[in-house]
Image (cartoon, rainbow over all chains, first blue to last red; front, side):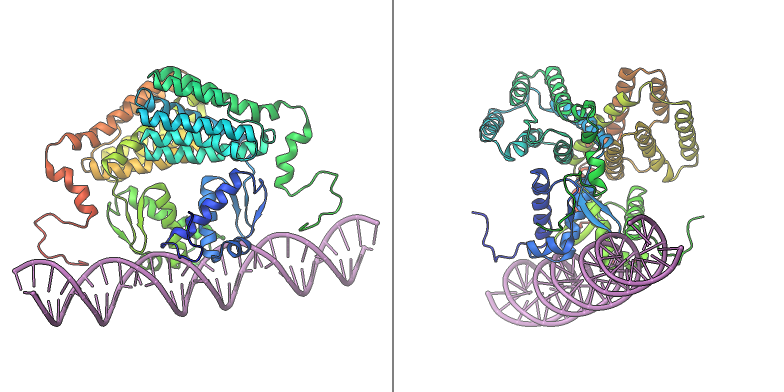
Length: 248
Length: 248
DNA sequence: GGGAAGCGTATTGCATACAATCCCCGTCGA
DNA sequence: TCGACGGGGATTGTATGCAATACGCTTCCC
């Protein structure tokens, strides 16, 4: 049961609620990269003042999910290819560390939770839809939680969401980003306490995800695809749109 | 030349200025862990409204340099021993990654800058004073900048400042945190392109820093030392202070 | 017809006002 | 003497107002 709609949330929680709502909307691609995020409209929708919306947007900007240009407001971030590379590099470093911390230290209860999550990934994949993307990312976040290192958890969460955004820009639409079998293999290695193998698997896994998406688009000789993020960044639409209608 | 005092900074820059000022004050221990940070007083001192101060404090809270308790305001964070361990763990993961990225890729110009920085560390150490602490941390940040990975740079910066705060709580006062000779060795390994050796050196370096401080205090059987952060966190002073004077 | 300048509107940046909350401290009762 | 209770002051949480800036449109000139 979520919560009575008229109940006031405790102090400071409403800004965070806005933050989480926007964050999730971005990751699930309900708000596509480049979308403008006006403070008024968001505040109106959530029933809060611009102050709280600004706070949420600022946090998202720090995380790299939105771009804020002074006097011009916030938009859903459009990561460059360089930023994409950076994010995956850092992610690999963090997740390898995580494998070291986790290998051989998973309790049966933790194993059960992780296996259950993988099962839900399978379901979501079968059904299709945006949930699949989120769940795949959350597997990594769940591992981070299990590690017991709160800072690592925060960083993994940030970089994961950033990667999700990147995949939404450079990846093929709704393609299965994480091969779920790879998740299973990683979990097995962790269970066996084979830190080196887990790290190697994770490394390969992330490499594969990155390549399936970013490098794929970089290697695609199709100039239109390559230019897409730059065009959208400038607010340019492809030719089939002669006259822009502000709000359909 | 800094800037004419009456010149208005561009939009959005004043909040960042407050953020940087507070951040530096915390790292250099001008604001000790546990110190209260009232919005009014800070805003008055910097000539900005509470709005901007809040923005700065929020950012610092995200970074973990200040704690914000709803309705009770912000204080300079008092990291627990567990948070200290987490921070050093994550830092090791990030800096090992950084070594991989840097090994064998330093240009002569970059090498010169890094060597120059180490020289300045030596000077500051000789003179003593709080600058030494900041410079030691900035060596790592400088390496991150050199890596060309902006995200890594941000994370290393965050975790470094957090570690600096931790050392200010658990470390011996003004002890030389980073052995400068270790910085030299690391740089040499990077120059030679020996990624594995650089990573190992960095690992040992950070391990040493952590042990010189955190573990040292954890092993110290002196209960008073162990309890200090918890006491301060609760606003408790040791016995020699019978009546508290609010503002000397 | 194309481009530059000017105006009006929409939106942001920041400060401030008001309400809510908490803490300190004095008072009261056991 | 100790603890519970409650008022006053200080501080934060949030909304709103005003000024500044940028954008889109019209108009004007070449």
